[in-house]
Image 1: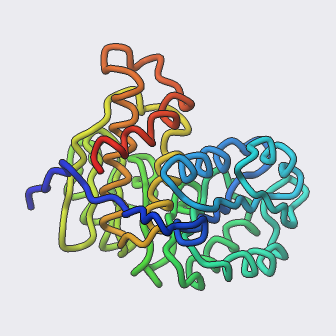
Image 2: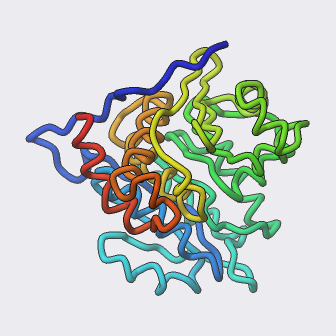
Image 3: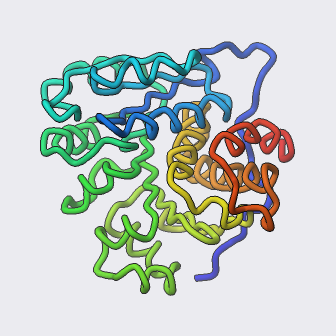
Length: 282
C-alpha cells in the first residue's frame, strides 16, 4: 500500500453566521501534578485552530496553574493524593462530556491506576469524537478495540511500541506496516507521528508533507491533539480532521522557523503560526 500525500487538506468552513457554539467545543481531559503544561498546550492548540470554546478538566490541585490561560475555561475535579485523576472524578467528567463537542484524552494524565480506569471508561462510553493521546494510549495498551468509530489515536514510535509486537527501530523502519497493525489493534483513525507522519483509517493511508525536525520535542504532540480536536469539534470526520491537523501542525512549524533553524523552534512559535498556516490553505 502506497501512502497518498497530504497536499492541500480541507479545513472546516467558517460562516459569517458562526458563533462560539457552532464553531465547536473542545474538552481536554488531562494533566496531573507536575504535568499541567500538557493539558494547557492541547487547549491552546485547539484555540489557535479555531475552536469556539475550550475547557480543561484537570485535577483540582493544578487548576490554578491552568487558569493563567485567560481564554481557557478550567474545571478542577477530584484527585488522588499524588495529584492525578481519582476514580470519583468520573461523575464530574460524565457531566462535562454531556456538553458535546470533541475531546482530547490523555495529555499529562500520568499512570495512576484510578486514572487508567477512568480513561478506559471514558473511551468506552463517550459518544463524541475523542483524540486519544499520551498516557491514555498506555491505558488502552492491554485492551481490545472498542467504540473506535469516532476515535483518533496519535501514538509516536515509543507509544506504538507498547501497543504492538514491534520494537521502536522496527516501527521507524517499517512505518506503513506499523500504522496498519496499530489500526488492526485500535480501529478508528491512527496517526503514527514522526518524520512523514502517517494517517490510516483502515482503507485510506495518507502521509504528511509538512514539518521538519524542530517538531521533535516535548509538547508538540499535545498541540497537535488540540488542533485535530478543534477540527473534529467543527464537524470534520476523523480522517479529514487528522489529515488537516498534521498538515497544519507541520506548516505552522515551517512558518515559525526554517529547517536550518529548527533546533531553536519553540512551542509558542508553533502555536502563534497556526492561524496563518490555516489561512495559507483555506
